[in-house]
Image (cartoon, rainbow over all chains, first blue to last red; front, side, top):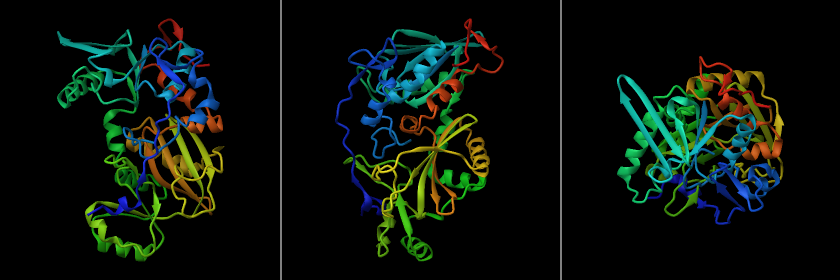
Length: 63
Length: 325
């Protein structure tokens, strides 16, 4: 009784890795441990893939 | 006049826009509806024929009448981080927040009504057709026989979720996948199935549209024809900025007018003839990865759009020129 499309399902990518930044409510930005703004570190964003279009997101399907 | 950003704390893509707004001196309040009744709060009164409402988040207080724009980025579900969350509290909080925000004169990116409608993939396909965008032959059906007949007409097919959502029990992803030639379509009866003629693509196109500005990126496709879904393809080729063909640009403008969207992230498949085939338009699609790879100023363009004065407001706001630099 499984819908046809689910024949092509695969396990969702796990994103358990922790990000090296935390939200600073005063600045309304995520900051790195040395105080730098995470969004300024494009190399880091690329490495983490946190700005990437993904599939299987639990909460958002607008990728 | 303030820009209100509805998003979750870990949305580092939103940060990319916030830094531009900060640099230009435009006031920003960032609020996650999930924090309502906790670190976020609201109040609104309807007295003597007028409305006055306020929101607070992270210690910042903003008048709803003082909003110039609302950016609905990645908001959490209302009140889910409350001390005692419940479905009832979520509905109450959602109605209160979004109901009051709808009373403001602020410009939306994107308005919740338009966003909700725009998420429907079947509706997207029809609007794309009407807008003049090439759409691959598509069938959405629960009739196995209809699927078999469609496969006879179009032997090379892909299948993908109708909604774009993915099952969570257990968590799985359903990428756009090539359908085997000998596929048994019997299971089509157990769920609406979207079958689409596979485009033999030479590149994927991500076209990010912010207001009137179009920023297109192109990624050459791997040689493996079974790698249909760019989100799962081997990362062999980078995204590169590209130009939008004028006919496509006209059709995309028509699409966004019809959808009443201020922002849209379009996915196209470019075939060997250079035709851009419409696949979908994500009304809140990610853009950070494109900017990171191409250097296109998408975040800056979003910030500029959000910072525009509301109609009738002067260019000088709060004593500051709001033009972004």
